[in-house]
Image: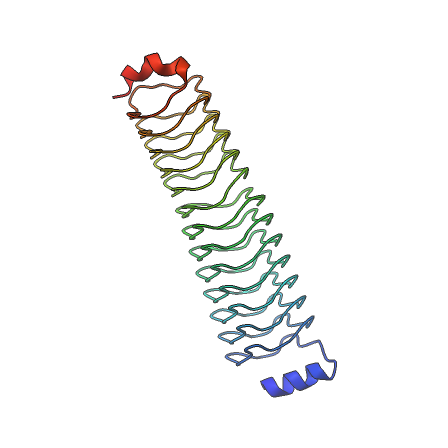
Length: 284
């Protein structure tokens, strides 16, 4: 369908464009509020700065599409294919994307606050500086995704796959990552104050200069992790595993260290609770 014809129909009150073929179409800045585009072919289409508020694009083919700075609040994109699409700067508050395919997509600086991405595929996606506050990210595939400086306060990450994720400088205050597999993940300078990481796997993870003030770190496996200059004040590290961990310059004042083995750790220059000062000679 030609763009001009579609827009004329829209102006006349038409809203059902399900299954329409707009492959490669130039739809920059168009207004298509509340339309039905389910199953539409929008592969490679240019929808930058388009207004798609409350529209239904479920099952649409949108791989390689340009949706940068599009207005898509409360839009439905259930199981839509957005592989390698450009959504940078888009406004997608309360949008619904369960099962959406977003691998390799550019979602930098997108506002997805209170959106639902349950079970979506975001493998290798760029989510730098993305707003994911109070977002449902349960079961999401984040493998090798870039979430640096992303805001995830209040986000639900139950069952999410996080292999190789970059969380550097991310805002994860009070987030529940209990039992998560975060082996080798970068959390450098991340804000994890008050977060729950009980039983998580953080072997060889990078938490240098991370803020873990008051975090629940009970039973966490920090084997070989980098915790240099990390803030661990009042954190609960009961029975955490810190074998070969590097805590040089870390602040553990008022931290709970019950059951910690101080041997085979590096804690030179670290601030420890007064009750553990006599164990400093073990950490060489």
